Image (cartoon, rainbow, N blue to C red):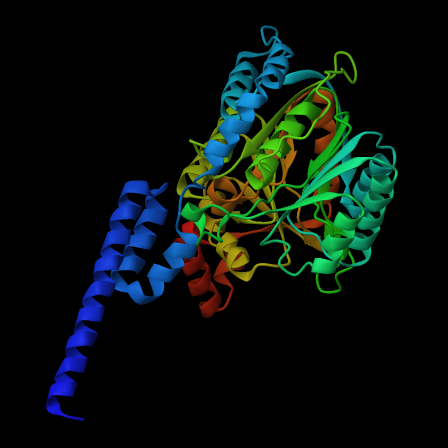
Length: 481
């Protein structure tokens, strides 16, 4: 090789290195202008400027703070559904007889949901997989007009095939069925499974984050919602996906502790509306559905559906969590399989404990996501410093997402206490303001606490050095997880 060729090669290498850093600098400017949290912004800045070769492709796939295109699709769909929204607003409950703290919580929650609380609803807790899928399959079997189905994960296993068979049977009986699955969550679902549904006449669509050109690299966005609606009269949502592990059949995780909720009443239409926004993104279609309001019971539960996700102008779910924490005066029980909140949430929890609130956080003892599990240990000292208590559920794997505030506020949904649920995933939660339902949730969680042991800061300090370093690093990069 001649000296000229060597010099030419070094020149090209230098130019390539300079261009790489210029691209990294350009992306760093994008992060500064569009970052949603200081922690995430700093983490991406450090990575893009120090390690552009690694960070640039990661940012292309993971770094976007917004889900471009969905907002336009949602607004277009909602415009055609304006009469539905107006009917739901007209059904809103007057809040004049409620305590001021509760009225404020309901007002803020309604603003975040872009929807009011509705009255005349009925809700039934479904504890664990058998109860959940027995109830869902029974409702499917009774469907007369249509069924809306949305899950993050569907497996082609025992439960997946049982669920499929119930849907196919109703489709062959003339019931219209629309099934929406997340393409990332269902990456290993065989094409034959979906083809069998389509051959039975079921409308099947995959929720793809990369569908529009602006999002062509954005595999980080997931639709984490789990929803079933039958005839506009009954709805289900909660933590369960469709797979044998959700029945406790995974030998590694064992018993699977999860919670779903069965809903009746006007709130079902709010669940239906959230499904249609996702369906409209995927298909740009709005199916003919039943929007006739029906009270399930009188006076019934005051219930709100809070859909949240990266298309929101605000960080809706995190702001809801902060409002719920600030509203707590006596009790605040949080249950989540993944607990990696930002500093604002930790500070709010510390302040609640300092006010004398009974702050308890229930997390799994077993891990299915190692980095998130490790990061949760790093919060033990911060929480214990002000009297907040952390418990580890030891009877199998804990996957439910439940919040209990005082004696009259409870939520059941799909959202976890981490950055992914706060800002990246599409989630959905049912919020209840009702003393009777909150009492049922409290009793359910008391039973769960019987299978827990309390975690202390010493548990973290007793861990090996590599674990403590890994936990701190995982917490540092929590905005990027």
